[in-house]
Length: 443
Figure 1 (cartoon, rainbow, N blue to C red):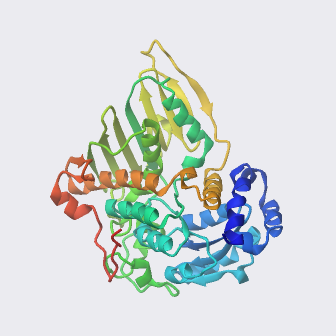
Figure 2 (figure 1 turned 135 degrees about the vertical axis):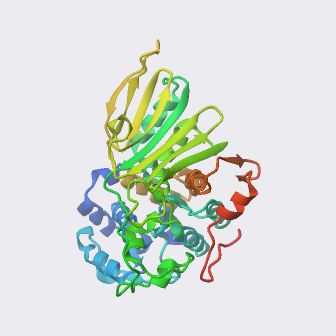
Figure 3 (figure 1 turned 120 degrees about the vertical axis):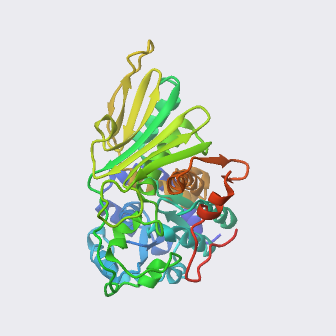
């Protein structure tokens, strides 16, 4: 065993303490890392650093012993911006290698793990290639952009035996875990309905604008990758990619994987028996989008139903919250979101249960990184709070909802086959077609 790998495994005990990331500030972390030989640090590279990719970098650098050594983005303007932001993070920008092609970053031998913060349509290929290159992976949600991509990503992790964490950071936040423990304690009584909603007043698509040349410094061909070739349009680019089927799946795969994840976790649910969805472009019919800005989806499970309800341009969601999960039981309803959780009484119940509002006590993204680094160093994938299998599970559920909406049909799932019962739906929707010479590996 190399001295580097030996250190990474032995130091997992330090990282596993977890509390370090919430106790020390950046200066304290810098001091800790300066006491560790550079060859004994966990070296990471980040691929896609415009949005959550960069948020992940900042959280990763709070974990003792983590060292950013490379970044990759198809937009040189983004790279320049991020390099200028490294000084307050105690990172010397002059020592960071920069790339515009992720394959070159993966070839850098001293990188131990990579962050994938690209648009969704790139997640699967980069994750598979990273595992093949011997890197551990932190991949943003949704882990896959189709059901077959999700299955292939799980197969890649198993084949290459790498540590792969999905970016559903709520799984590492204490108040979310406490709420699920309460749900599973049985105190709510029989839970027949789980409501999951996301009302995002601030989110809206871009305007309808003419196609144009890509901005200077942008490798648009590389950005498209396996997606269908189209002329560059600024309202399909950067943040707005999520409103187009080529690259993502709208609010369902953006916020939905976070929130549906906890609906599934609380109920210990597998995949649904059936799914049906209705919605459309009702909020912003004059703006540039393909995915629905208003959507209601019903998932049928063996002993309960789960309802997904989303709307852009509105903040007044269920229970006066703009997002959340409600487990509706005979004895009470537990309401959970990023701001905390509580239990409200069921007036008809003789076994009343009430819980005062419980506020968050930690930073979920920071703690998710503590968890990932600990698993990388211990080599214990079972310690991950969101292994690729869990990320693929909820991404599949979200994809099922979008497929039901796009097909306009109530769909039934054949669990033994791992497909829908309708072969025409399987052929059209299980895998988004790859273009430009790219293919999804068969594992």
